[in-house]
Amino acid sequence: MEIKIKYFTDKIEPLCYIAGKSDWIDLRAAEEITMQAGEFRLIPLGIAMQLPEGYEAHVVPRSSTFKNFGIIQTNSMGIIDETYCGDNDQWFFPAYALRDTVIHVNDRICQFRIMEHQPTLSFVVAERLENPDRGGHGSTGKV
Image 1 (spheres, rainbow, N blue to C red):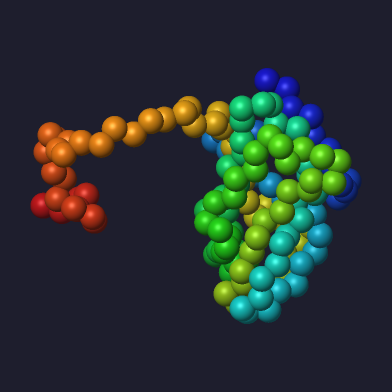
Image 2: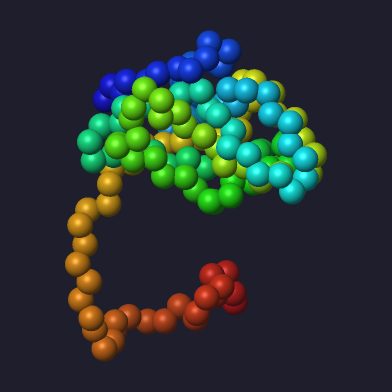
């Protein structure tokens, strides 16, 4: 599948897979960002894409983002659908700083994957589900 991508800067490395590691693709900060503890910023990622119809991108922090930069993603996971595809529809990472930090141009701060939209579902009301209970919230791993 081919996807059109527009770069807003030549200061970040082009997108690529890291062969054999994951099918998620890293995204990089397109600007140097200085944040104080308690500050919110939209960090520009320097790209826009034309996703295929029926697809969306899921954007989440990398596993090292909090450890390296002290930031968290404010909406837990970003969803970018195929309608966000104009020349000025740059992708951003909504970040909240838990400590003072500096994020440099080209730092890998988040990752994405492209997923097909969920199919249309219908819900059927039932009095019973007729399956065994697992033991309630937080029960996995209990003896």
